[in-house]
Length: 407
Image (cartoon, rainbow, N blue to C red; front, side):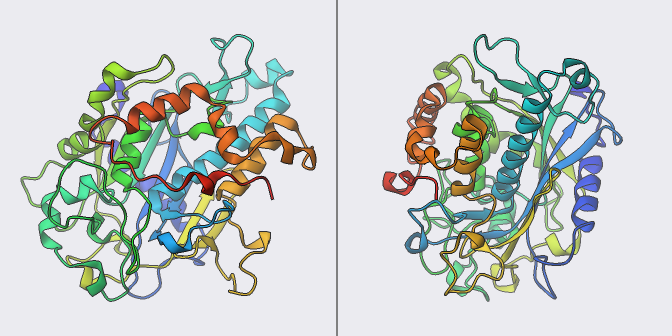
């Protein structure tokens, strides 16, 4: 097995993730017949083994905010699907790690012997303080089922589910069976697919498309790209379905969906980026609260998303509003209802990292969009990605939705 990852890797990863999930309180978890999707990021040190791998960020969820409820203030989480929540929890973890690194930068000796550190200074960035994943460390992604979008709509499991979302028992805007009811049901092309909404369309792109994009641009996003080298996933592990046909190769299918679709970008790459080829693994069938039934009609999905990371984040979001659990309609605009993983909070973290605690003057530093655009190489690579088939119909939200300043 390549890179020292054994055939049991899927089992090791799944065991670690489910154990981390089980250690969290019941708040925000499925109740009764409800199910959800579980996703997590893990980090391993060499050589990869059960002892050397740790969950650093985790998310659950199947919901999105519909188009009419989007906010121009960056104060809600638009997409609360498990993979997206896990990735945003990971981004928060990276901010904590950068802050920790900044604090120990002048203590080189302590840093050299700190094995809990995930990042290290990148010596290849002269004149700029940039970090990269520590030597020998690998980043891993786990998902309890096939990601929604292309990976699901082209799988044999999709034939089991041809029920429009409006017929399901909870107006499902979920990815039951790992599938997503897309613009053309049953017309499984390799173009970008949107996530369904509760009777109304969303502007959120499917998880298959987002993961494919992470395999070109990295998981860190534009703001963090100003502190980090692109962070790529070494392995992707997906839970087996109870309904999977015997002759279905999940690993081959994942490779086609999440890697082969990005190959046309190979001749468009900018120096810092690559077409990342993760290794793909199958995990055992996940616990019952992550097992979606054969039809959308029989699936009752949990409306909440859990987000957690190793640096202290633990929060529950209501997926259809993108705000913290328990937010009343009256108090919906209070900053206290904002999730720690919404854009407004990331802008706050970014400015704090660059300018320290000058929160008053930071309003003059630029909008969220302007600060993202300062990552010029990332922005250009993102444009190239969205200009290339099959990603050239990428859904974009109105630019004005990223013009907000720090609250």
